[in-house]
Length: 305
Length: 257
Ligand SMILES: Nc1ncnc2c1ncn2[C@@H]1O[C@H](COP(=O)(O)OP(=O)(O)OP(=O)(O)O)[C@@H](O)[C@H]1O
Ligand SMILES: [Mg+2]
Image (cartoon, rainbow over all chains, first blue to last red; front, side):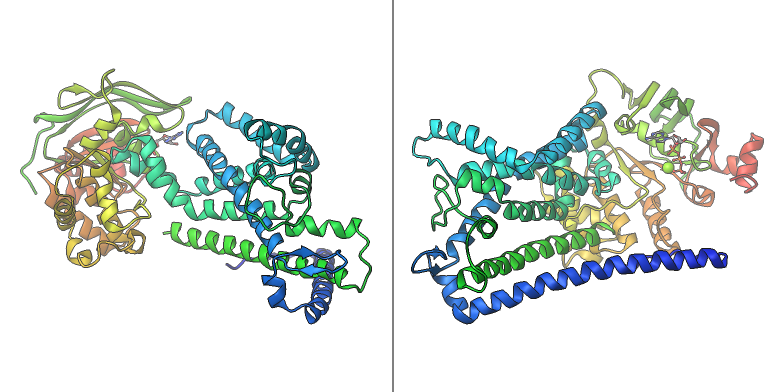
């Protein structure tokens, strides 16, 4: 899409002012681009040195991740599995709740209820993640251990539940935007064909908004995958190759937080491993993001008849 | 065109002292009119005069708009449409409506047509029904090979014909058409007009249109609404050639918009 430029004739001094504004904006853009380029350059250089040492094949297929061990192992699979568990698990909890809230707000809630719920949603989005993490550790995990005594003190289930709670506002808000973008006459048409409201919601509203809803889920998953504090507090921070929700795990991003705390010296392979993991995370998150964007533009293209 | 009808012919829909307000704004004031069975009735009038609102009162769609308050009565085939034991969902199955914007669902052509019948628990020959209604809007020959085509890939005129067919699939008694051609080019418009003619007198048709010539071409009776009031209602020919009200005349001759 092309943005339309505002053009208007003005005095010379106004023109000079506008040129100044344009230069400042350009400078900001340049700073952002240069910073991004520098970040990418560091990432590529360190990851490159890592992969010169450890073959990508071994990196992707070995099943043990122990970069700081006396005999270090660099199989990233446990981190990938852990990351997928958190991303998918959180979405499994957040999607039904968020989507139902969005449908309720869009179709059923009175304006006062809607305002109240929107306020609560905004409030949830403002809770620091460390608070969520402590909630997971001191409330959710003990509750889970009452239900299933086999649950470990650090476990994936607690992390998924609470990360799901954290991304709930994202899912709700973005799904609601997707619902709002469905033209109201389409819903009227469904009702005018003698369908009860519930049927119009499930057969017309949701299918028409499905692209946007999927994008909402992907964007929320990208947030879940990037979350570190809740995951570290609830699921421990130990790389283990397991799908069990009752055991602890480590994600790519949670591992990265250890760079700040650890004692990996610059230039060592252990140090470079962080950048390799960072590169994987970057590619993965970027992929999810682009998939979401593509879905959004495709669904917009289809709705605009 | 069918033989002229007096507004006193056996009415299907009768509005009496019908008023609608949105908050403080009055959209319809004290409308009383009868729609005779099997006729085509046009509702004309300047933008915002209440054409859409009147149509939506006839199938109880209007109450879905937030803040709409309706008073007065509408009778359909002798029963009080706004009576306490009337199910609005059932009303909408018998009084179908087509909208100004084309509104195909993001589904296949087949599923668009099947939507209404399925919602009302239709158990007969769906395939046959789809063919029948698509034929009656001249769409069958164009899409018969591929009923799985997404409806959104049809042309604008085809979309609107699909929407009409979709409504016909419910076998309603009355068709309410709200400016069904305002988004279409002249050719597609002519097509829709000939379909409307062909559907009469099997269906009673009420058509809201800003296009007075369309009203003149199509309808047996014409109602002229102005600022929520029914100024004049009668045989189309009489209303166009010899209007009773000065305001009708100035609207018809294009001196007001
Ligand atoms: N949902 C609504 N909420 C508030 N006011 C409304 C609503 N729908 C219609 N109105 C008002 O009621 C009046 C009649 O509107 P209506 O849409 O029935 O006119 P119309 O004759 O169909 O106009 P047009 O030719 O532009 O379609 C207008 O003043 C409009 O602003
Ligand atoms: Mg209208």
